Image (cartoon, rainbow, N blue to C red; front, side):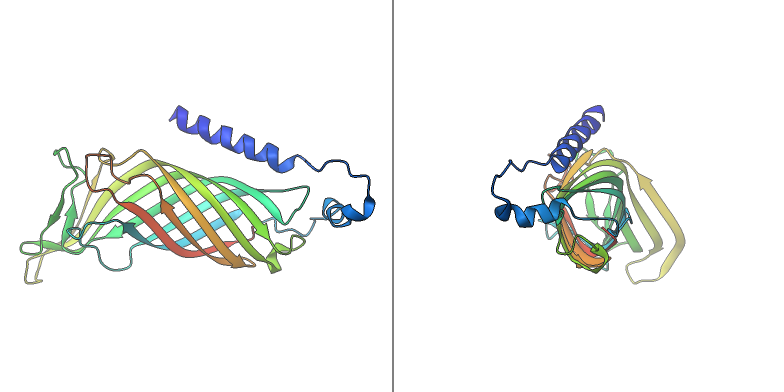
Length: 252
């Protein structure tokens, strides 16, 4: 955990220092610097001061084997507190950094994910021919540190501007659990209307690296993210790579 936070602080410190340093060389010819001088004197008093970034998504697993049956609207939610550091040479560009929480839920069809199992690998068991559950999901929660390179067509007022952001997120796994609801027999008859929950992180990588991209206008936009490293530990299960597609609400 100490190495994780050290890496985050090193990356954030590097990006902040580069975003705030004016790297323009001295130029003797004033006409050639007319546009850059305009940006260096830009007044960002009306720039959005909403530092919250909220995301609602549809979640999936890339490279998922056919033996794992998912269904329904698997969904996620992310919430971050962000800081925006405009480039002095051109405030249309900025570095966004922050911290927050990312959650993901994958729903299964008559399949269980035995996260609290005692086997060396995570078992995904097909239970279609026996008792099964009406609803069954695998949920994860991460503490995350997003870093973005942003572009706003109108840096004077980003609330009325086309915006694009590319970046990455480093995440630390805080919780992984499955949740089952309403046990039924193979004919669909209810056996027991109860909720069962098992929690364990043993099969999953303790950190994740996500590539992110978002585009929007004003405070609303769309985003996509993809996990680069494996979701499940090597040798503990299939190599799946979670992804999310959804909407973003933010003034940044």
